[in-house]
Amino acid sequence: MASVCHLKTDFAALSAKLELHSYSVFTVDQIDGLPECCYTKPEPVIDPAERIEHADRFFAETGADIRHGGNRAYYPGASDYVQVPVLESFRSPEAYCTTLAHELTHWTKHRSRLDREFGRKKWGDEGYAREELGGAFLCADLAITPEPGEDHAAYIQGWLKVLKNDKRAIFAAAAHAQRATDYLCQMQPSAEEEKHNNRAAA
Image 1: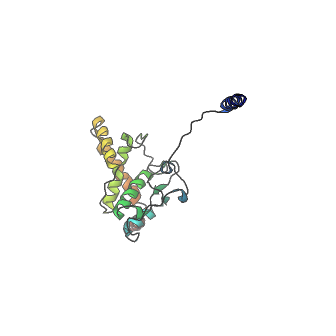
Image 2: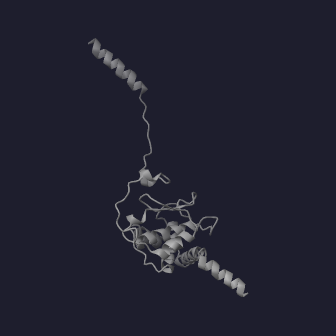
Image 3: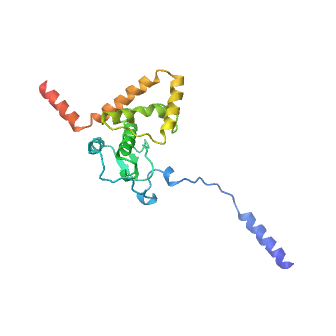
């Protein structure tokens, strides 16, 4: 009987010291800027040699901080870099270029560039939908057929909301998309050569 009482006393003392805590838990894909070793490397889907060289040159000439790795693509804004998975993890070179073109369009909205803001607060909202045309415009300029992604359904839903509230929103968004494409094109060596030739001719 004494041993049972002793156990009850110990349990009561232990219970008095216990505290409940809640913690926010995130998956690796929800955290930006982790070192490469934290990510599971995807199985290669395509041969890395199957690159679209003119697109690679175009992307490199923008001077954007493009980082490869992880399992998702994003532009974090304040940190001002573009993150994309490695080429081999995409189902085709076109899918890789479509994704990178999309993120580089977001990159142009930084206040040091085009200073564009559509009131985006979260992924898939109306502000986000307005941003999405730029990637399609850039792919067209690079003669790349954009490949539909799993998130395109959300973009369409976002556009349905936008158009419901403003029938002319598509024209404003298209103008911004063209401006973003023009900005990226103007960073290419050919654009600089053309400017130089025009100045010389004048």
